[in-house]
Image 1: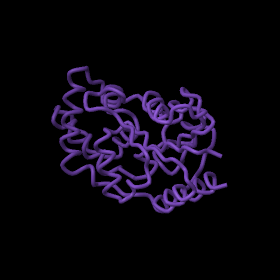
Image 2: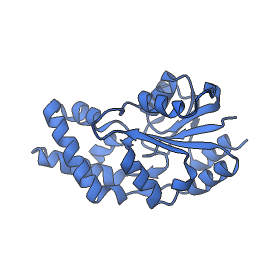
Image 3: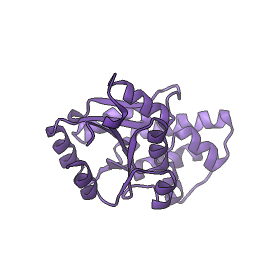
Image 4: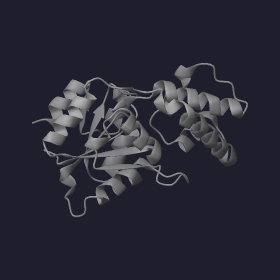
Length: 215
């Protein structure tokens, strides 16, 4: 049905929980905020970092910038590889590529980090483009990221595209650009979150995602 498939990264292709939560914990500790429970920091998986630090911990603009800097320091050193690829994802990507699908990463993560993760898990060869956020904090909004990814395919109708992700930001970004979406419930967004965001489709497992994308 779709010739171009946009994939979120965190919570969709990989489970980044350990690396993200520990990096957020480290950043908060550098600002004098003690958060001993890593489970409380799973909300950082998906949204742009600036948004998470501001919304979840009430940090002001200058504190947010420092928190993001500390987060990236820790993530670059260790967090990036505290990550696990979901079972069945490499096989899904290979299948789609063998079917001549165009695959794109559309993530709020820094582009350079996303590229490193794809290489680490040996799935970089399946992707035509990697679209993430910029070091200066620009293009971190998911609607902007999806728009930029779509522009890579000049002239292709919107009906050719679908966005796959686990959080409401992925679905909202797809809807803002007039393309269909798949909400994956094995990630970090709840069914309620994905339904309220008006996902076109919902799947529980990677196998269900495979079946949906493989007619």
